[in-house]
Structure formats: structure tokens, C-alpha cells
Amino acid sequence: MRWPIAPVGKVFQPNGAKVLRFFSLKTVSQLGNTITSMSDPFKTLSLPKRPCLSEEEIGTAYRKLAGELHPDQAGGDANRFKELGEAAAILRDQARRLRSLAGVDAGSIPPPEAADLFPKVATLLQKADSLFARYAAATNSLSTAVLAAPLKKLASDLESLLGIVHGWHASLDERLRALEATWPTHNPKEVAELADSFAYATRWESQLGERKLSLECLN
Image 1 (tube, one colour):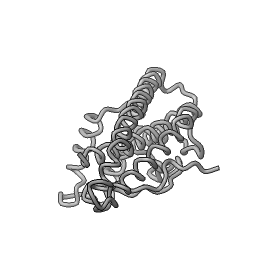
Image 2 (image 1 turned 135 degrees about the horizontal axis):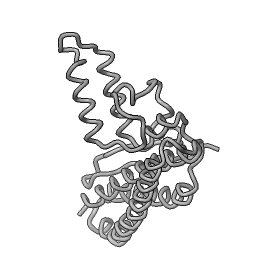
Image 3 (image 1 turned 45 degrees about the horizontal axis):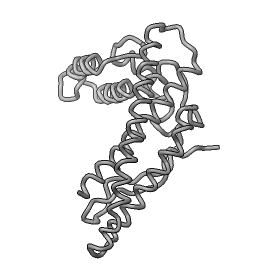
């Protein structure tokens, strides 16, 4: 069974003009993609192969090599310069970095924690999109006023669920630090599950946060 990460939805701006973003059905294997075709993004950026890499480490390594390989520089290499950008993007993404590190693909179903949150997130995203559509279609002040209470409840629900997802993401960060402490000893299955969890947490934070922003624009 292929699990959708989120339902199709639209975010509406208060003037009724579509759309901040469209969301299509995605499986976790599409979320951050499977293992990149790049052989080794760590080697490409001359960085150590480990679970935790800071933005400063990645940025410093990228800038150093980019200065040497930029096509406008003497001896530059457009293809290798492009690979640098791809490698940096992979290593900045916790899920993709873990998959590349452990040599695992994305799973076809959500990990247990994501499976528990999935129906809550999907339902709230659908509810938000429905209310935004009704607001955009409102033709007078009365029809807009009728939506005041549901929108207020939506704001509370978004805040609550975002807090839960943020808390889950924080627990994933703790697991990542624990993995770092014992690396290179690791269980590939656990690394794959952690990577998938990061993919879901990051996407849901983005989707719920955008709905929250759209709601704030209505006020």
C-alpha cells in the first residue's frame, strides 16, 4: 500500500486569489527522493561521513570548493560545480543525509510515529483547505462572519498540532545525536526509519506552517 503524505489541497489568500501552493499525493519514497544517484555527497564536499553535520561545516566546505570550481574561474568545472550544489542540498537535509550515509532507500509506508500522526495531519490539512475555499468564495460580510468561529477553531488546532510535530522533530534530533555518539556502529533498519521520520516531520511542519500563515493573512 502506498501511503499519501498529504491530500491534494490549495491555500487561499484573503483576497480569494489562488494559491500559495498546491499539494499533491506523495509517498514517503517521493519525500526527499530515494538514494541520490550521486555516488557520495560526503566525498564530493570532502566532509566526514557521520550523521551530524552543522550548517557551518557544510557551508564552509561548499564555499571553499565552489570558489575553485565555479565555471567563471580559471580551471573551473561546470559539472563538478553543479555536483557541489547537489551534494550540499543532500547533506543539509537530515533524511537524505542519513539515507546516503547508510545506503538505504526511503520506506514505502510511514514509520510507527508518523503513522499515528498521519490521519490527524491529513484531516486538519483538508479542514483548513475547505475553510479557505469557503472564505475565498464568500460574497458578503454575513457569509464571511459565519466562518469566524470555524476559523478560530482552526487556528487553535493548527497551533496544537504544530506543537506536537515540533516536539516529535525535537525527539528525532535527540535520536540523531545518539546515533552520532555511537557511529559507525548502527542498525540500518533504525537509520532508515529515522530518515523517513525526518522526511515526514519536515514536510508536515512546512504544510501546517503554511496553513497557519495563510490563516493569519485573513485577519
